[in-house]
Length: 342
Image (cartoon, rainbow, N blue to C red; front, side):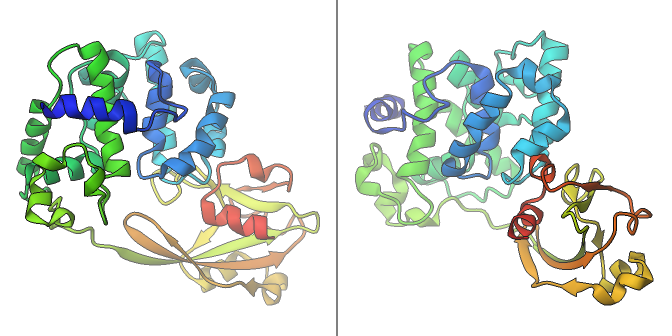
């Protein structure tokens, strides 16, 4: 049986069919889910997705909203450039396309934050365009099934895999098969052909899988170039008044936590101490160090608390934010955790 036919049949009965962004051809909902699901688990997105739709029911509502509102609702999802691009993309759809998402992957790719695979996902799921997706899960599925052992850190090899993915697409009844096929290959990678301990016995295409035949499914995909991680230590000035207002400043773009509200950041305790009025330096209290993992580096965060009157930090950039107001702001996850812990 043809690979695409097998996958479409499997998806109907064994794939994921009850997620809130499925069973729709609405490009706004599909686009929103695709952006949220980048580098983020489905379980986490299930919590954020309905809240976003409640606040921003369509692309017009999202485009009209202040960026701070978008970042505030996104707070905790991480990778905040996604939220900034989400807002930019919504505005571009309104300004350049009259509020209607383009129907081809080629045009979708011209919008902020939409890469080749995301564009293909929207175009195939919503408009049945015959285009291949190639996210992390799909790369794993296809390299295993095909026995594709070329190093994907080499751009030419990734282009070869794109070509192979395109050749495997359905060729008939595209309005029905393309959305189901695209969902199926994503489902297979997420639920069966997992990175570790794949469930080969439950795989609908196990009989044609080269990696299974070789007994080496976890060898694929091959990618030799590893990201070189860095380490950075940051001191956080946690200034607070008797009324529990906290001093927050908006982070510049680009940079760590760009566009989010944050405690003032310093490269050393000495630099932090220098901006605190002399009469309050003895009251500085350093809390336990936190480690926050980013894609490319580990941040060692040193929170330093001080109780001051509202006039004491006037020379720092930022403003006092009341205890009832900061929960609605876009805050980095570790800052939000610190504030919640009090």
